[in-house]
Length: 131
Image (tube, rainbow, N blue to C red; front, side, top):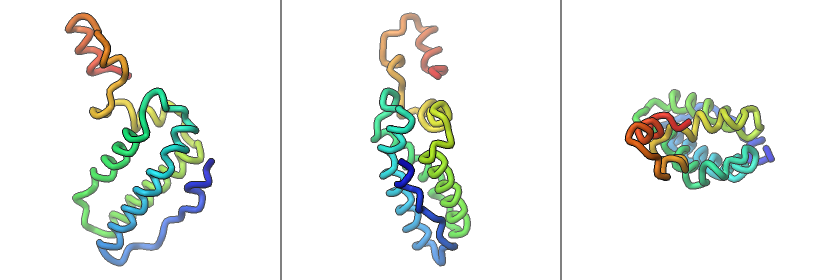
């Protein structure tokens, strides 16, 4: 299962901003290709869809879109690569993945948030504390 990312190594420092940007796109492609494996390992099909996981990966990358120093981008790529390796090699447990990447995201609402929840108090409670 870990063969998708097993041979992914962190390359040397980027020479320019364009090269760092290309590496970010390559990392995004690698992360998206490993999503089916991640969903199979952690059995999170009932909580999140592959397209939602793709948007989570994209939003994590977009968080750092303002950075223009290639060395900082390389450091963030290294951290992202290590995180992806840890996830694919099953170094984390299911609740780690759910807590860090799935729950608490505004674009992902659990099934209980879409059902009729009763009073206004319960609606507010479920909206703010659904994990």
